Image 1 (cartoon, rainbow over the protein chains, first blue to last red):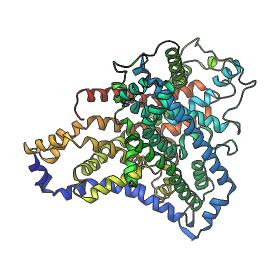
Image 2: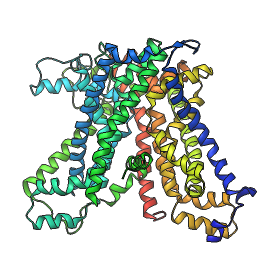
Image 3: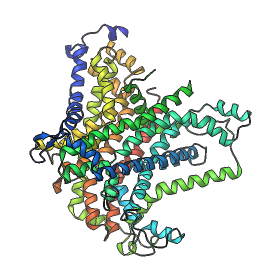
Length: 305
Length: 313
């Protein structure tokens, strides 16, 4: 067997392994270069110029783009909204995701079926989630308004997606509906690897349920949870489809996050240079946001050793 | 000691690659025999919690299905009728009577299938090269690491330059552009999932086949790919769903009415008719959500089977 692997310079059709590796990687590398690497570089380049929207020609250096990013009130407002959107989403998704995973791992009857059902929203296209929740939250026939009024939560119908005060919290709830299953699934997989002996030993020491969770379960799931939370933070902060489809950034910009702002600047205001500068700054923000996660991720992994 | 960024990213993607085996948690769960079963009030509370979770998660979907099969005059009743009084398929008939929706459905189907095929083919090439030659050739190793970094770049950050690129080349309204775009987006994920299937036992089997006279491509086709089938299926489902659901790039690059996908077409439909005919809108939602859900359910079973056969790992 080793004969074939170590001393077979010629493999398929007389190609050397090196040529074969290069040949196999050619198309994938080309695709990633043209559609990821080159656009990344182009964004940095465009951010330094005023770019003509129609011809794409770069004119006059535009260091002012970056100045605008930091002074424009609309961009500043969108930045705060993005932070509120991301923090709100993550706080709810982490807590709800862990809670769901614990319930689904408790050995209840119908557990396997429940696990399958809980994952459904993650598979639902953003546009379908939009249809469902625009219907549920509408202020004329919407079920949410009806039920909330029935139980006395509100006195009058609320236009959840049409009121600047309620639109962002509503978007966060819908987003949590769709994406909490991701956290649940990862935590669930991790929960199944907790060694029973740890619990048994702690129980002998007289630990209660809460103590078991805090001293064993939580530290055990922490690395997976943190990694999942980091990914979700990135994907949530930059998410476009769901918030845009639900409210198109409105009413009066009340749900315009940076992702939506970038598109608006680029295609409505037709300012490619500014949109690129905003993208570059937003990318840097991503790296900054990742640092605390990476730190606690390492700390939580050390606990494992 | 500082982990190289790529190492961390790799760990993250391992976690993100949960759908590597969606069947696994469901298949292996359950309490061990030694586990103490809690009783009484706490147990009851757990069941109540499960009921609340399932209601919150799945009732919105159920409400969509229910609304789609009710006549409009029932839907606009207030207070809403929680239990349907009469059922009808009229909404679906209306939906398909006008050819536009069928057009969107076909477009989305072609786009999703095309993206899946392209991603899987390129993914198999790259993952095979990285798994087999990564140890010997630096280029293959670097490709494996760098492609993972590419996975973390959010689409919105590339929207503007890609739009410059596509519109500059006069390629707007060309669906194949979106196929390649989706493939580029999902390729790193595909490589990551697939390469784990190209290692371990598979290498021995492949080498045995080559000693027995198989060419490398013959061994790839007869030995390696069948071994990697669960990985191909789960990656395929994931790519299909992404391409089927994507809105931002599709809305930017497809503007001709006859080229629209479901995501774009259905959201337009909502803006045009939503308030008047929720039944029609919900019918569109049901049709749109079915392929991803069916695929998920089918693939989950396939994966559990694959694991049961003990083919890989």
